[in-house]
Image (cartoon, rainbow, N blue to C red; front, side):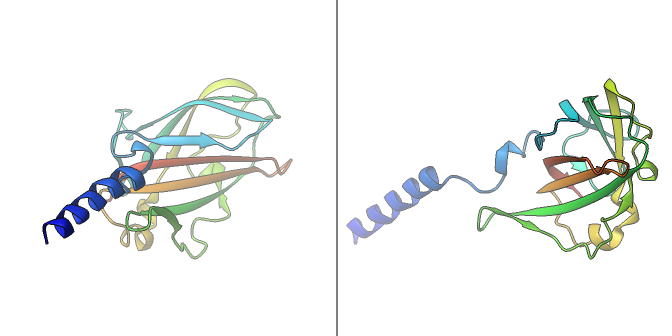
Length: 176
């Protein structure tokens, strides 16, 4: 019996160190994690999140407008028409994987220039503020877990050239 308990204890200890803790992926419990898909027309050097008053905010709050502040360079043409598509993804700590949440098209084919992005976006280096406001999508927000890791993949398509800018951000999010 003592060997059984010792074996179970060793298995539990080793499995947590080998397989890791799946609670907060990519250290999202303490900081956002983001990346830009490779792009020849757009570079992002940093991304921070603030509330509408400009105060840095973490964890983020999806029930209120969120401002993503990007230090970016537009190496392509001036962008004056943007299509915005947002994929919302939830972390499953039981299976250690991300699951895309159905949004039934509510977050697709949005006009980026009237949905939180100041257009036109000129060429060159700039600080770009992007407001993400899910408060008008309460049907989606109401289904989310509070204080959990979420991933937003935002695809911006320049309507004039069809060039795409794809930014993925993972963060700890509060809903209430």
